Amino acid sequence: MLHDLDRAERIRYERLQDAAYQAGEEAVVKLRAALALAGLVLPSLSNDGPVGCRGLVRLGGCSTDVANRLAEIVAAGADVLQNG
Image 1 (tube, rainbow, N blue to C red):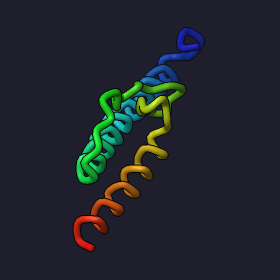
Image 2: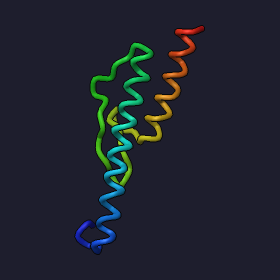
Image 3: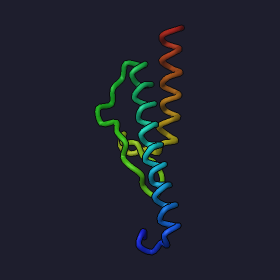
Image 4: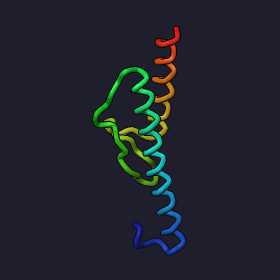
C-alpha cells in the first residue's frame, strides 16, 4: 500500500502512524498507572504499535480508546476504594 502513495500521501500516512504509535504509548502509561492504583499488574501490557493508523495496546489486543476508558474506570474505582 505504501508504495502506491505519492510523496505527500506517504508523509501524511507516516504522521498518522506516528500519532497512532504515540497514542498507544500514552494509553499504556495511563492504564499501567490506573492499574497500579488498584494494586493490579498486567505483565504483558504493552504498546502493540499502529495498525491501520490506529494505536493498539496489548492486553490481548484492544484499541487505545478502550484502554483509555478502562484506565478511567479503574482509576475511579480505585479512588472510591481508597477514599470511601
